[in-house]
Image 1 (cartoon, rainbow, N blue to C red):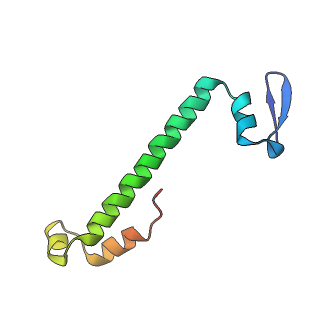
Image 2: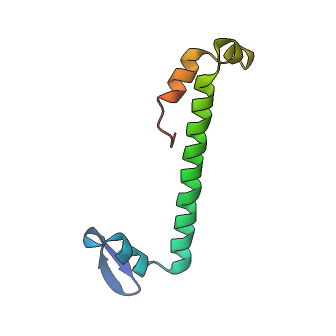
Length: 81
């Protein structure tokens, strides 16, 4: 895949991550890294919440209006969903 950037052609297929950072302006790279950090935090938060729900008793689940089946279905989802 070729991208045109500032009047030069860049072949993305052979680029390393470091090469890409050299082409991308620093502020865009920092924004991307911040977004990645936020996404990773969200994934970790979902994993913790699902683990906590799985540890609740059936009585506690009934109190909050959930079933064991709903919790099982939630636990098979990947953290990004």
